[in-house]
Image (cartoon, rainbow, N blue to C red; front, side, top):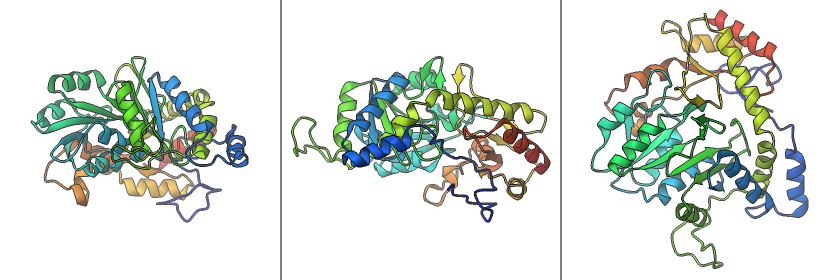
Length: 374
């Protein structure tokens, strides 16, 4: 049963098209029952290693460590890059809150930057203006499947001796000039929450090409226990491990990632074609980006009330969601700064149903209902 929240919440899930519904039509059930029958249901088991190997092979990144969710993946990456009190980490204000919370959880200070109007991602020029002697890292967030200007961010990081963590929660399957998201920075992180392209229910992954960093990530996610000496803990760690059951679901999902992505991209193309004359504005990835098309998201015309449009859609049986609030507007991070592009995106953006099982006819129908709601 898909949980429905917000406008339309009083409708049953059977007559509402949700924003997302995971595709569990492969070997998910069989692999989970294998875990149960074998008794390997916790953090040790064959599926964890297999899932890590499949993500590593698919992304082309040498090392992958499965963890319990995408948020702890970010925290683990920052922690193992020695980000802490006194440090500043530059992060876009327009992002999901986990990108910001995990910086604060290390004791570091998030420094907010604006977004670019075309792809909605981190504004490189604004980032340059925010670098100080305390800047330690950049959080590059690849929102909705698009990808940041990683060549520019890598050049800036080298110039100022900064670390880069790529938040790829929404970008499994996204590439820039043939290189997968997560391969540019010191570490990349993925989320496998129920609404992600590949899901494990709850789950995440940290990827890295550096062997020493990857080894530390593996140790720290398991309470800081030595990788070669049982029950010997030589640094503070966390219990961030993924269960074998979650990994089993992930293995079944990764077996079908290519057709899942193909279908999501086809759905996104229908949306863009059907809504091309409606006045909405789609996210426009930079040249060279192949997007995962995680959630098809767009900006409503300035004169349109987003709440009213969403309510109209809900009344017609179509769920939607607003895009993220700017972090600098939230109570615990509120500043007096202005980030006009990010604020505009946050005020006008909505996400539409984007799951692989949608039919072409359903997508066309959603477009007609949105056009009417405008």
